[in-house]
Image 1 (cartoon, one colour):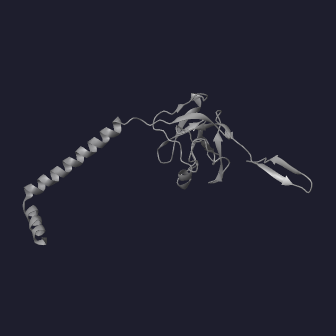
Image 2 (cartoon, helix red, strand yellow; image 1 turned 30 degrees about the vertical axis):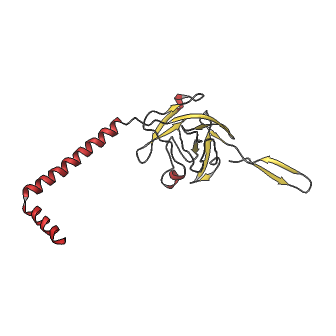
Image 3 (cartoon, rainbow, N blue to C red; image 1 turned 180 degrees about the horizontal axis):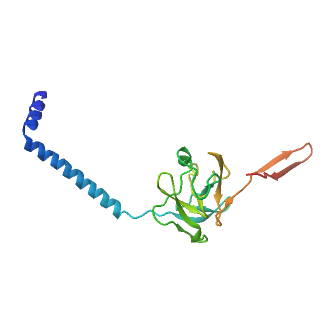
Length: 186
């Protein structure tokens, strides 16, 4: 069998017409594949994000189309995201290739987009880039609230576009009484 492959290779190398036909067919198939792929990409509908309100343990918060809580990163400045690389894998940015839409109770004038370092468009609300949290596995969960990660705190976003700061209560015990006071700092 190895002898036959050698003969086939010799025939191809000796017959320039066969080689030219094979190269032309390969190039033609590549062009057809490229044109088909770009046609499909152009005909695909734009993916636009939807931001809505949902009641959670924190009260009414912004959520994405799947009902997942939306967060803001306190390190973001001037409407630009400071969360990239590993940060974005834990705190996925809310992306939109089309114009983002808002649900009932939200102001359409507060929604927009900002360009990320990789060129994608991230949804903003009241100029705050928006994110979800990888550990929020179900709609309405708020496990990311108040987390200190990647250099700053993360907070759920209110309908006004501000951080919902829900401070945990702390308990202090003295010899005779127990008092519960709110934690004063985020």
